[in-house]
Image (tube, rainbow, N blue to C red; front, side, top):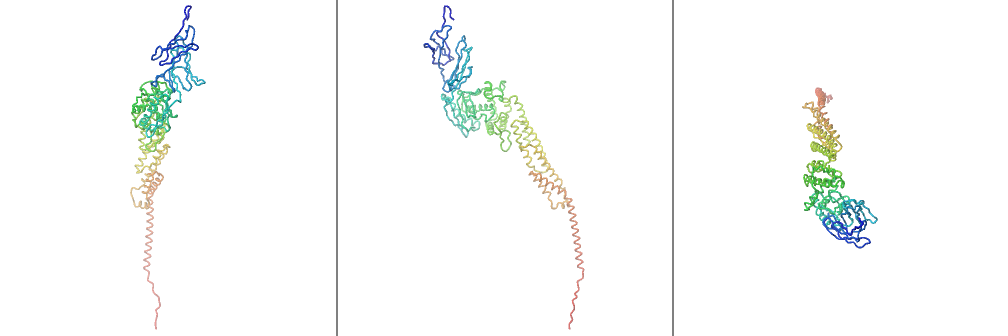
Length: 605
């Protein structure tokens, strides 16, 4: 502030701007040229000396404009300052002194750029009539503390290259779209994808699962997740950030298989995309840094089943979940083995569920396996146990009772399967197990065990009677309409056996003349044979009829023999009487005298 004897003024000022700046120009409207020169260049800033055109006295203001360029230094894709036709990223500072707060910051992007603020507060963007996007801060109480970082990309400026790498017996069809001014990204990503996809197909054990072409596009990552990539199978597009490292490229390539179509849960797709990306990196000799290590006992770690959709978790939780999912995938792969995992992926792709019957056509399911079906498939296809891994890494506290119920139901299922001894349990129990409806599964298993007890009773009765059990009860057991018909069939067969045994009991212990006479022209043994044959074929009515016939024949044989003997005796007596009469008649006839001739005697002369 001026005094009575002194006047204060500025004829120069010093200002720090961002490191790497150049092309400085200082001007003031309506005045002569102002001068600016670099006083010092440091790693973090550049110090400028501004020579004012006129003295700036106390209490006065003057408006100067300083123009300068932010020069892209080149180098790594993740550098802070990047300037190109397709993409720009740069930091923003505010200018003032601690004693003169109240300045503000504005950033204007030309039409065609899609911009966003990565760090800092620049308010809501405004788009003017000419399509320019402007970000503007409020007045800053502490300008020297202000910092912002912005990114902007302009879509449409791409160069394309089509690649068709061999994957198994087929080929993947990809178009790689890189920014026209980013040749290094195009060369690196195109080459890596061409080499990696055949390796991934071999390791995963599946062909490339897409019939339509895919586009791999360089982008600014709009993902808040752990990787600078986005796989959208519905759009047939993969976005890989300009700064993505080789592991991210391999990870997104593996998402060609693990993308929601093969497995349902996000954690499972991320887990095995990371796992196979690591295998491909090792096979190709690529140094690729993936997620960090995970601690299973970390109290801050969230269960993988609690990992939300992309962008719903804090970055620290995202990072931990990616690391945990990879740790689980590695443990799972170590236990399952490469062939075991490939068998699981093949079943998942073909929608073949766990708990398949021992014979017949495979039972298919609807939809990709979730965490429950994946656990079932892993144990079904590899013969290994993964319950402990799911309890450690996947399950929420609310999921643990389900795993307990699963263990009990599976043990019960195994016991009933052994008891069935080759008989196929109905699909209802397998569907209930696949859906983790363990109470329903137990209800069906209880009914199955009751039916199997009837089977054992029936087998014992048939064996004792020398009969062959028909297939009818087995068919009733294996059908999908419950066990009522099985129980009814068992009862009917037991009744038929009882009829057969009654027929056997009716068989006389010894043969007498009267029995022989009563069984004349009768075939009870043939009836028994017919009963056995009909029973073995499942024709219970015919078997009962034949058994009843045999029993009736033997039961009536004595009376019939006596009746026949009486009739025969009467016939013999009648025959003897007739014979006696005939003999008498013959004798009487022989005793009669011979007749005398009465012819006249002739005389002669």
